[in-house]
Amino acid sequence: MSEPASESSAQFESSGRRRSAGGGDDLSLTEHESRVREAFGSGEHTVFTAAEPVRGSVLAALLLEAPGGSRGLWVTGATVTGTLGLEFAEVAHAIRLESCDFEQPPQLSWSNLRFVSFTGSRLPGLHASAAVVGGDLSLRGCAVDGEIKLYGAKIAGSLRMAGIRVNNPAGPAVMADHSTVGGDFSGNDGEFDGPVHLYHARCAGGVEFDDARITAPGRIALAADNVLVDSAFFARRCHVEGEIRLRHARISNALVLTGSTLRNPGAVAVRLDRATIDGGLFLGRGLSVHGEVRAVSARIGRTLSLTDAGFEAPGAVALRLDAVVVDGVLDGGEGLRVLGELRMEDATVHGPIRLRGADLYNPDGVALNAIGVRADSTFHCCDGFYAGGTVRLDNAVVASKLCFDDAALSAAGGTALTCWRAQAAELTLRWARPPDGRVDLRHARVGELRDDPDTWPERLDLNGLTYEILEPQLGAARRVDWLARDPDSHHRQPYEQLAAVLRGQGRGDQARLLLLARQRRDTARGSGFTRAWGLLQDATVGYGYRPQRAAALFAALLVVGTVVFGLHPPAAAEPPKAPPFNALVYTLDLLLPIVDFGQQNAFVPRGAYQWISYVFIAAGLVLATTIAAGLSRSLRRT
Image (cartoon, rainbow, N blue to C red; front, side):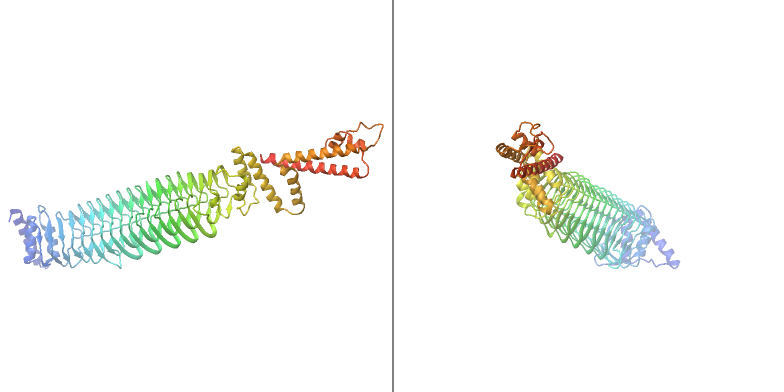
């Protein structure tokens, strides 16, 4: 044995004799403990093959009372009896007690340690609250029947729990609130029967729970409010029973839950309210969630990915993204399946929103709630998009295209789509089939509106809708059918809006036909005098939109009057004073109620011709009134 080793053994034996003499633990070394002592002095590895017992008190004394020159304690395969008590101790040596079987939880609270590894060991728990570890703390492959207490611990290296099995269903499996980890926190392939607590924890590296299983039904399975992670947070292909909670978390890279199964039916499965995730939130690629996913007021950098994911909360909100801010794309393309409501009220997405091919199903409720959403690019609900339930886009603002091409909406006769006061540079409504339910576009503002006559819905609310371009360019008669689908078609604005667009396209004749159809609709709804007056205006001047009809009627009356009174001139009222009779001017005097040519007062017809003159006077009054009303209406609309 080397000289340092001899000195170490001598000091240890002297300490043991003093402690025995003082009535403390009997540290008379067994054969196996002597092997550990000898190896510790030389820094060698002690391997036991038959779970030989070694007292924890012996190991503690060895670590505390040996000089600092040793390379560390490295024991494999031992049964550690009693308690390894190092509370409040400062240990200058590395501790490696691997594949060991501990009878009592190691007591490391408030200690200052260099490096600790219990890799592959069986422990009834671990008490290391407020411990300071200068290197790694390794629990890889451990089987722990009890709580791992790391509250307030400071680990300069990594906390390694890959492959660990922790069984503590009555309490937390891991209690690491307010802990600090200078490297990575790795729980890959771990099994935690009981919650994992990381409240206010700080990790300078990444957090990894890939292929892990956390079981805490009805409770918070992963409690990480206010956690700070300087790299990424991975929980891929993991299985969690209970809630994942990361409210106010700050993750400098991505949060990735792809391929995982998360179950908390009837409650919240994932809660990310007000979290900041700089590298993107990835909830796709086979993710299956039973319960609500919440990210209210969260800030997500780069991407929010929902592709090929399934969210289930029947009859409730399955995915709640209210007031979320996404700095890039919100990608919920093909493969997204939501049973329940997908809700993103007042969300802001600085890139495109892609729901191409998504399948949203919430019968008798809202399938997609995007009220007040702001999309700085496109919003795609197209290419196979299906919503079984109402789609709500009230007050939404889409900087580019809002697309429903090849989409299918089914609301069982209720409201399929509502875009009340929505704004979009372009709105396309070329559905895969006519929507089953009402489509509400009231007071929406659209730059370009594109639709397909073959897929117009049976009910279409259009009052207040404004647009600059309408495609395809159909005839007025076809568009009248489109406008007539509004059950509140007594509103004039939809007709006037379409007429303005038609005139802008140089199709003034079609605009007049459209407005004429509107007036005829209003007349048909009238009764009594109102209806009769409308029919008269239609017959005479086409409500002002067919002035040539009035001109033709006036000319016909003028010709008839000229002929009749030319063949049967009336007698002069005062022959000496009467001007020469002119049948044409006399007829004009009868027909024009305002203009006076002097003929009507100078000549008085007798008998039947007097009644004929009355007919001409009445016809002139009616014609003038209808022309004035029609022209006034036409000029006002223009």
